[in-house]
Amino acid sequence: MMSVDKPNATTQTVQRLNITTKTFMTLLLTHAMVDAYGSMWPVFKMLAKLDLATAGMIAFVTNAIALPTQMFFGVWADRGNRRKLILIGLAMCSTTAFLGTVGQNHELAVTPAGYLILGLLLLPARLGQAMFHPSGASVAGNLDPHRRSTLVSTFVAGGMIGFAAGPGLFSLVYTRSGGQTEWLLIPILFVLLLGVLWCHPKEERSGRPTPFIKALSALRPIWGRVMTLYLILALLSAMLLGMNFLLPEFIEARGYPKWMVYGGGMGFMTLGAVLGMIPAGLLADRIGRKRLLLTCLSLGLVAYYVFLAVPTIPLILFIGMCMIVGALMSAGNPLGVALGQSFSPPNASLISGIMMGLAWATGSTSTWLVGYLAERIDTVATLNWLGLGWFVAIGLLIALMLSTTKTHANPVEPGAQ
Image (tube, rainbow, N blue to C red; front, side, top):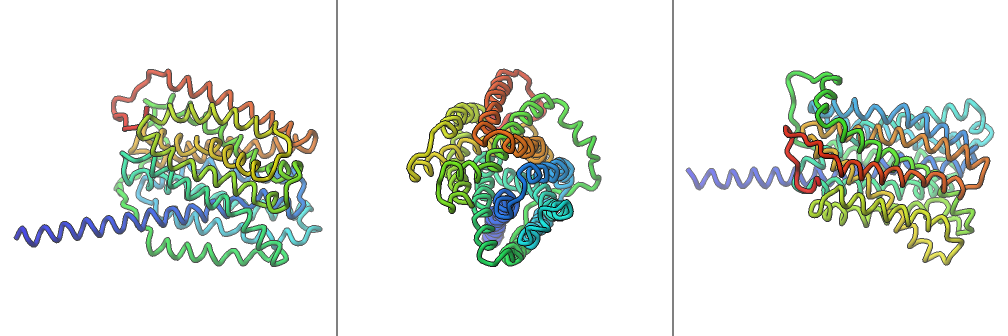
């Protein structure tokens, strides 16, 4: 009998490992697609010659409406609906493939009706991102709690690859097809089909749904730490979104080639982020997320202002600076999400929604503000003001590290310090 049971147990383990591997690989690919189609707005607004202030307002309003819903989607995901939200979210992001249809007609695009249509195309994609991120992040982090930072960092790195590729891909299709960006529906539909076939996360379904307010009340013992971490990530999101929004104009003002303006610069910043995230996740699981986060913020503050202060330099050196700044500006997001999840693993999706959705929604106000300021003062001066957020974020993180509040009901995971 034992000779029969052992092979069966081994077979089940191999099958489960195969499903887990396919699920995680699908998560990386779907995250890349979600963030690729969500990152097309900054380069589109330049290709379509939209007013900066209006384009910034559209980015802010759509983010402000959609991203806070990540908390609600997080609660829904924790009820056993993560797979549904991952797939539906991916499908909704496809609406940005129709931006070029409106943008190619400049006379229509710059009218109030045109701006309204563009906003209505961008909003479903933002809602799709809101559906996807808490579910995807919690599935990735819960695959192995002892390697949560590594898995979440790898998951975020997949999204950053898409984030880097999105502007360049959109720019290529837009210019080569005369604005017929509907061709971009093909790759996202292919990945959606792959997700249907391969994405099968292990989910715990509760017979009695938890009301949203009750789910929030479960975080009461750790609410102070959650809110402090949320404010830190909101500031980091504001600086990252503001920088990305004005990056094409900043690179153009420095006199670099057009391919750097239309996606290349953002691509190298994101490449730096990807190259730094996975090693940062591995290191955080060893020395602690808070300590590494403080190190990244301190170095990021210096790198950010050096990046703005240095005049036009040889292109290869500028590319290197883009990668360094991108790595340090982006490291805080996966580290912060993993740290927040460790506060209460049973509520991982809800906390992910707060750390990703609510924080990014708050941070999205920067796109409107920097767009407004850039029209009245120069781009570099606007980005200098934006960088003040580094100082506040570092102060809040030090306060969090000095806090002695502990949640006895939820033991501290390895790497949470």
